[in-house]
Structures are given as C-alpha cells and as structure tokens.
Image: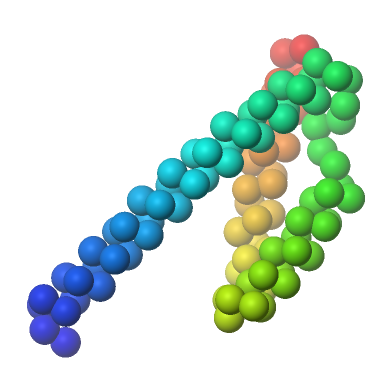
Length: 94
C-alpha cells in the first residue's frame, strides 16, 4: 500500500469518526431532554423494556449491515448506561 493510499483510507476513517462524534452529541442532546421530561413527570430514569427492544432492534440492524451483533450490543449498552446515569442525576436534582 502506498502512503497516498493509506492516507486516503485514514482520511475516510477521520471523516467517519467526526460524523460519529456529531451523531452521538445529537443523540445525547435528545436523551438529556428525555431525562428532564422524565424527572419533571415523575417517570423512572430507566425503562428496561425499551432498552431490551432497542438492543434487539440494533442487533437486527447489525446483522443486516454485516456488523458483529455482540459488538453492537456492547456499544449500545455503553450508551444506554451513560444515558441512565444522566437521567438518574436529573431525577436527583428534581
């Protein structure tokens, strides 16, 4: 592989990483709004049924995309756990 080829691949990876960061930022803006809504409405910070459905949905999408479903589940679980932590903090601030 020439340096130019490797550089092109790396530029694509950098662009994808940037898109992922912006998508995650947008997702967390929305989940923060959900957390505030839950806190003011007296709803629990976590929704295990919703979490299970989302994980199952993501695993199906991962299979369609030829991505390891185990990896996708670990990735989503990490995000869900962080969202719940934020929701619990918002609920405590009440």
